[in-house]
Structure formats: C-alpha cells, structure tokens
Amino acid sequence: MIKKIDAPTLKAMLKDGQEIAVLDVREAGQFGEGHLLFGVPAPYSILETRIDRLVPRRNTRIILVDDGDGVAERSAVRLEAVGYCDITCLDGGVIAWADSGYELFKGVNVPSKAFGEMVELIAHTPSVSAEELHNMLKENVDCVVLDGRTYEEYHNMNIPGAISVPNAELVYHVHDIVPSLETMVVVNCAGRTRSIIGAQTLINAGLPNRVFALRDGTMGWYLAGYELEHGNTRCYPDISKVGMAKARMMANAMAVRYGVNRVNKTTLENWQTDTERTLYLFDVRSHEEYEAGHIPGAVHAPGGQLVQKTDSWIGTWGARIILTDDSEIRAITTGHWLKQMGWEVYVFSNSDGTMMTETGTPSRQILDIDKLDVESITPHSLMNTINARAITVVDVGYSMDYRKHHLPDAIWSIRPRLCRLAPLLSISKRIILYSEHETRARLAVYDTKVMTDVPVVVLEGGREAWMAAGLPTESSPEKPTDVDAIDFLFFVHERRHGNKAAMREYLRWEMSLPVQIVRDGDARYNIRVRCSSLNLI
Image 1 (cartoon, rainbow, N blue to C red):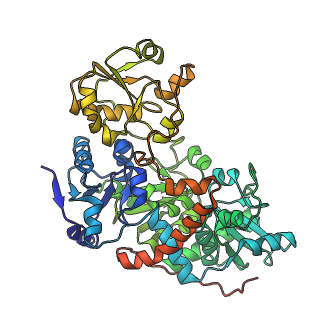
Image 2 (image 1 turned 30 degrees about the vertical axis):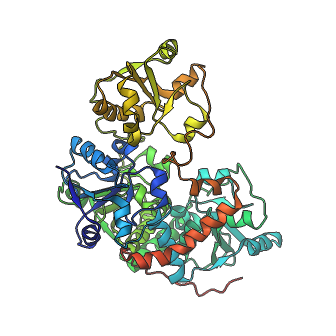
Image 3 (image 1 turned 45 degrees about the horizontal axis):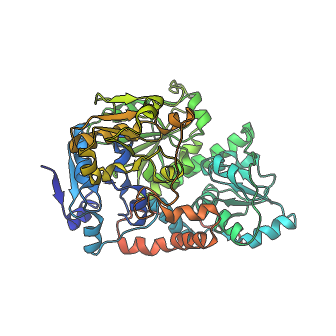
C-alpha cells in the first residue's frame, strides 16, 4: 500500500530538519509551468536514469509529486522495485498544494535563480546596462568582459570581445586575464543569475578591480539592438604560478570568511559508509581535468553550473556535500555559495591529487533497465513488417523529435500517458516501442506489460539507427499538439530563438522570484556577501 500525505503535512516536513527528497515526477513542460520550490525534477519517463545520482541512499525519505493523476503512484512502484523503501506520495499533487494556499513556482532551476536575485538585492551587486557596456567598448575603456557560462554556451553566442571563463574558474584565472588594477571587469551570462553570481564571486574574493554584472546578459545586449558574435573560441589561459598564488590566497580568505570547512581522507571514507546520511561528492573542475583523473566515485559537476542548477545534481535536502578539485580554489569559491544557499558543504583537503586515480567519465547507471528479457528488432526487419496489420509502432521519445522525424505511421505517446493507448494496444498482435536510442523505449516496456499481454518489441538502436540506415521518416509539425507535449517547456524555448517578447517575459520572471520566495517561506538562504565600495562607471 503506497503511503500518502496531504500538503500541510509536507509543508511541515520541509522544516523538520531531517533529510528529505521531494521528487516531481511530472514531465519537463508540466514541471516548468508550476512546481514546489524544492521539488526536484525527476520525470517518470526517465526516472530510472536519474534516481541513482539524485537520491543515492536507498532509505532516504522520498515524497513524490505529480498532477494528482496517478503518475506518482506508478513512480513509487518503480522506485520500490529498484530498492527504495521510504516512499510517500503527495495526495492530490501540485493541485492540492496550490489549493492549500502554498506557492507554485514557474520555470526551472528556481532555487538557484531565486538565490541569484536575492544576492543582488542584499549585496547591491554593481551592474552595467548593455548600452553602458557598448559605449565602454566603443570608446576603448580599459575593461574585460568575462562570460561566466559554459564554454558551449559561449561558443554559440557571446558579447563581442568577451572571453569564456565559467563562473567557478573566475577566481582561479582572473589574475592572468586582467592586465592591471585599473581594468574594469564585467561578467555576463545569457540572462541574470550567472552574471550576478559571477560578479559577486570576484567581489566576495576581494578582487581590487571594479567589477560589474552585465544587466540581463546576452539577452539584454540583443534586446538593446546590438550584434552578438558566434563561434568564438577565446578561453582563459593556463594558470601561472603568480596567478595560482593570488587565487589561493583569495580562496583561503573566502573559506575563513564564509565558514567553508575542509575534510580529510578519513572523514570522506567514514561518510561514504554512513547509511544514515546522504553524501554527494562533486568534482567542480572542467570536464577535461575531471576525465584526466578524479577521486573514485566523484561526480563531475562544474562549479558554476552546480550553483546555477543545484536541483540537477542534488535531490536530497539536508545531505552532506563534499567538493573537490586539485587546488581547493574552485571548490572553495563554489562551496561558499552552496553554504549560503543552505547546504552543508565541505571541501576535500587532498589537494595534492594522490587520490585522483579514476579516469574518464563513468557511465550513468540506469536502474533495472536490463532486468526484463525484451525482444528487439533491427531497423530493416521492422521496415519489412511495418505495414503489416495489427502491428502498432509507438514513439516514446521527445515530442519535438517526433514532430521532426518519426517512423511511418508511428503514434507518439510519452511513458506516463501510455495508459491512454491501452484499448489500441490490447487489440494489437505486436507492439513496437522506440525512442531516440533505446533507453526510453526499454523503460516504457514495464508500463506496457502492465497494460497488456501483447508481445512488446524494442527497435534496436532506436530512431537514430533507423535514420542512419537511410530508412524513411515522416514529420508532423503540429503533432503532438502543444497541450500534449508535456515534456517540452515552451516558456523557456522561445527566448532561445530570438523571440524578444519571450526574452522580456523571461527576464521579468527572474526578477519576480524574490517576492515569491518571501511568500513561500521555505528557502534556507543565509546570504552573507561583501558589498563593493567602488562606484559605477
């Protein structure tokens, strides 16, 4: 019997001081339209691919949230099957939460984005507008623009002349980039959060230069009518001995100022065997450095991104977090933010690298995916039988991928809504499931077998193998409909494709978050920042 609790009970549990994982098992589009502040996205369609890293301890207290449509209960069954033992569903889902007078938050990565807005309000983080920065660059003012996003985002588009320096790398590399104490430093991202956090990181570290966030980032630049560059490869240089010494001095001072404590090998090993507390071990360096050698079991989570989207890596509130790198500098600068966000965070003190013996990137564990003995079919074999009567082909992949390319006559149905196809599937003689590769299709087999005894087959290699074989596909730009495409968040999508109205809406949403945070009352922020005494331009 699956346990259920009401919204007031969950509200109280969020403040009882014990570990808790609130997993929102709805799809991305549903989640982005309204969720609990500390609801962690864990969509049922790919639940088994995320759960092991989001919630590594099997006896963690887990609360599942849905739309009151039964998806939480189905998720509970799957989680119990892979070993989780303390699972409860929120009765009535997000609808019941809202009906109880509690706050629902639109968008993604809300705990991190709201935190950035609160930092700006409290620290009065200095900022410049796109127009001000444009004039500075035009007049050859002594300034550098540092792009605090990932290199991939920077490479896609950047402010003219900007250098890629992801936020966690700022304190580490800034001394080898900024030519003098008179040089102004401007940090940008696509919107607001990483601009604010990046600039404030340098201020918190005590960089003597004037430091500013670019207000509204590349979106603000584009909205002001200025051109962006594309395809650039400018990146931070290798760190020098002098730069390392300055960065280490600043980081050590930050550790003291913000109470970021260190742990040694013995503590790490003890905590790794503690069955009553959850431990996350993150390597916050670049992907290349991580692959070259990291502590066994450490998960790669570049520091700037970890602060930007904590709910992509951490599913359990109240857990311990240990951050590691090869100098402690990036771990400290990352940790000082996580601590202010309310996390219990430590830096691993083995900076000599002797424990970094594991190389490469471990493959992600997909729980239970190979337990079912599922028949597969090759693309060419399926092509020879696809027109046969009583064969039903179901695409359980991404809705937007289906619109672009799907197998002839295939039906689209995301995993949590496969039950709607039960009447059709039950009269089929054979059911073919496929997705981009095979993962989503194989996971959907569990749901299909609950509904019918009709044989279920998975397309070998998925749609990618089908297309690689040169076999025909169809497109359907309006199917599934926007309403049915519950795995896609249109709110975020349009701003990435030059829609200025969507950009303005997105920026307004970010700036509105602090008001919601106050109303909600569940945030655990403890913001302690340095305010810049330097004037604006």
